[in-house]
Amino acid sequence: MQIIINKTQQPKTHPDESRLGFGIHFTDHMFVMDYHPDKGWHTPRIEPYGPLAMDPATMVLHYGQGIFEGLKAYRTDSGKIQMFRPGENFKRLNRSAQLLCIPLIDEAFVLNALKELLILEKDWVPKKPETSLYIRPTIYASDPFLGVRASHTYRFFIILSPVGAYYVEGFNPVKIWVTPDHVRAVPGGVGEAKTIGNYAASLLAGHEAHQAGYTQVLWLDGIERKYLEEVGAMNIFIVMGGKVVTPALSGSILPGITRDSVIHLAKMWNLPVEERKISIDELLASHASGDLAEIFGSGTAAVISPVGELRYGKTTITVGEGKVGPVARRLYQALTDIQYGRKEGPKGWIEPIIG
Ligand code: PLP
Ligand code: COI
Image (cartoon, rainbow, N blue to C red):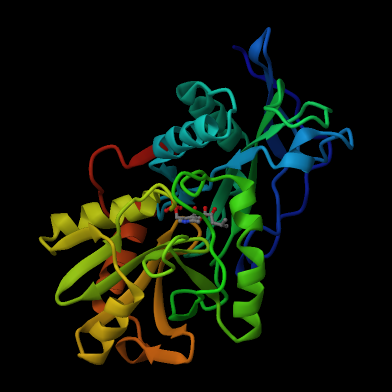
């Protein structure tokens, strides 16, 4: 399929790179294609960034049949532009598509389309340290129809946003709120899909956490409300008893690509890694016995985010004296060194775009 390119006549002024924030600014162009049962995915095009016209009955607005991905393009010190494990994101997009009854995409085609878009938008990849170009591929149900069923038609788009740190804290400890009052996902549900409704389901608890002065929610499992699952936009790791421990992929948490990269690096460094159930009681007992060294989250937007304080009911614990721990620091350094091209990573992790 040939990608039609329609360039903007009104390029935007670029934002100040020292004040990018996250997901506020968008580039000049976007990639779009549509799905029709008779044609499959068709009419791939790169066009000026702008609003999508939508019938008020468009199914995604009513029943939430939509999925997305999040990945980044990085500018290296020598001026190259590269992505980190993008193939994994398109693989996960297809896994989400299966769970949401959305037709699969051709992963290789879409990766190439993204590369074309990035080549056109190369000047939008920011230069300042720790900034990047966040990439948001999205698919939504586009039938104008109010019956509850899977849509017959879909739209796929990719938009790009130059970003700084996800949390205002940057690479500094965040405060996490563990709530037994709300759950995000249950086994047999769509917790492992990157689907829009999972984020809607997280908002009320997130709001309560913010009001109490916490950055994000650490979810417990939906059945016993006892085992750690993940944080709003990150997977979670605990360094205790000399081991790096993370909740096993249960079907109700997102299989993070940063999570997988952390496990890979930790194993490469001969750190003992365990993927298993971790109860909140085990975590608190580990803190009480002096065994708990670090807690940190992992994610594309957040990279590695140390947790300095955790609150569960009436119990508040300070983790690692509220400072960045050595494992989190080493992982942050190693991941960003690979992403920004300062060091070579494991084979296949870097997808060069330019240079
Ligand atoms: N968990 C949730 C709910 C997320 O939204 C994200 C972010 O994408 C992650 C975990 C981390 O996943 P990844 O490392 O692939 O970005
Ligand atoms: C990401 O890390 O890419 C995310 O999608 C997290 C959040 C912004 C939803």
